[in-house]
Every structure is written in structure tokens, then in C-alpha cells.
Length: 122
Image (cartoon, rainbow, N blue to C red; front, side, top):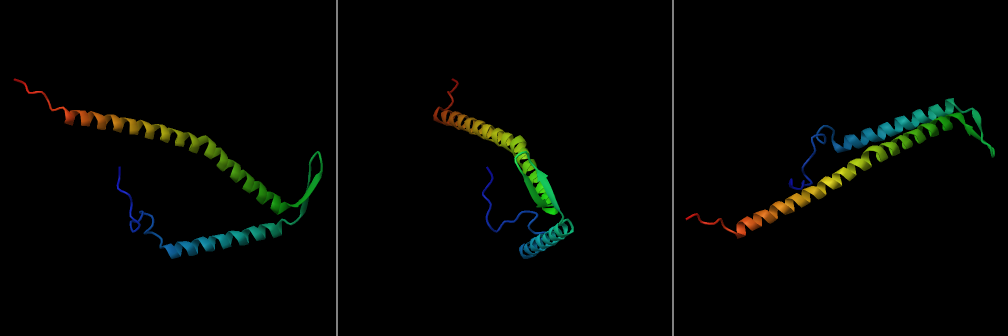
């Protein structure tokens, strides 16, 4: 098992962008996307009417498009989580359990070998 990492150890990607610059870049990107979303909403401010069997709902076109985009993004992430992440976690648990069993068996065999010295051939 590898030694635990110390706090002052860095990943290989940490040295590429300093922490303060990375924070500034994230703030800048959030601002850019917020402005782009506001512009998109302003350009698509026409109301549309969604007709359900039990009633109607009037919404702004830009909000409907952005909402559908976010809903698709979340459903796609959920499908990836259910289809990939959960099975991989299950496999990891099974392999970790098997590794612990094999390590325990190896340690018990080593303890037995140490406790019983080899017989002297006369």
C-alpha cells in the first residue's frame, strides 16, 4: 500500500496553474457564462405556451431551452452514474474484499512457516 500523501505534496497538474490564478479563472468563466446566459435569455424573451392535458403553462422561450439543457445534462449524468459508476464501485468492493482475503491467507501461511522451522534432513 502506498504511503499516505502529505499536504505539501502536489499533483502533477497543481504546478501548471497557481491556486489564486485558478480561482480567478473560475470566477471569470462563471461571469462569462452568466453574461452569455443573460444575453441568450434577453434574445429569446418571447413567451411560449406549453399545453398539458390538465392545464397550460406559459414560459419564456430562453428559460425553457436552458431548463431543457440542464435537465438533459442532469439525466445524462444520472445515467452515467447508474450505468458506469455504480457497477465499477461494486467491482472495486469485490476486488478489495478478495485482496484482503488473499493478504490474510498469505500472512497466516507466513506465520505458520515462521512458527514451524523446516525439518532437518538427517
